[in-house]
Image (cartoon, rainbow, N blue to C red; front, side):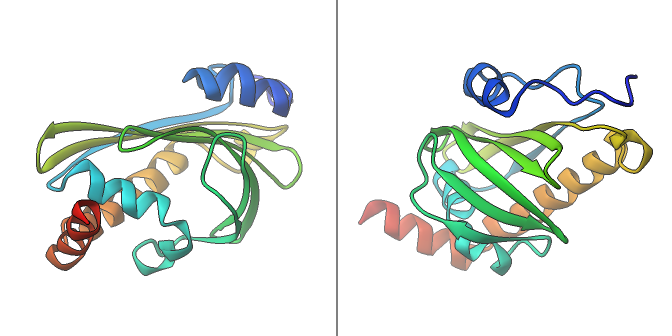
Length: 175
């Protein structure tokens, strides 16, 4: 493992990796986690893209700046105490949400959330990420990243399977 690896440029990471459904396979830290949620993809999509309301169900993150959720639109969010400047790379409703992000000016990430409906009321959600930066493995590991993903997916599952939220989202989708 190259401790000094910084990954591709941010622009290259965005255009030639994230937009094309690729992670940085050379990144020192990588993870993929999956959960099956007993809720329709529309409910899960609503939770993921209603980013200003993440703190209602996601205790580890908050969005600080957000405009339109569309490809190439920037946003700023905070994960725990780390501020992340991000840009949406893929926005395919009820299927995929992906972005590239930079933290501390040198840590570069690709985050992907993939939704695969298994039935009308059951969806498989996969969260993938690659993270690169100089000396990163000295203080952050793939195992720690995976634990964070597992925790986030557990929070998403709990929120999506909440009958009140599911009914509210289902009504708004029908309306």
